[in-house]
Length: 140
Image (tube, rainbow, N blue to C red; front, top):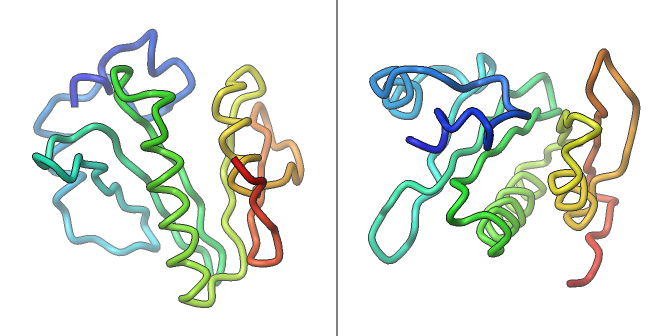
């Protein structure tokens, strides 16, 4: 979880600068999805942790957050994981998925748009993007 404490890399994230034990506890706890849960992104070849996803359910809407280690950024890992997650959520009957992103985080905005998220509204300092099963992801 060293990438979580790289404050330059994590400048757009709120969940950072914690002790390793805190990160491990959050990834391993069995709390409710309604409180929000962190999920690990690991390489299939060796189970190396390369990122994480945050999900929180509010009724039939899920809030999504994600981070990837700098060494694995812009290599398709986050797109692959989020594509599979969105497909799974669609099969579960989820009505929409929302993600908040700072306006200057253009890489994340591009990723969300590529996945089929559309800008919905601005709340405080964040742009809120929404994905619903009726959205069609752009081709790569």
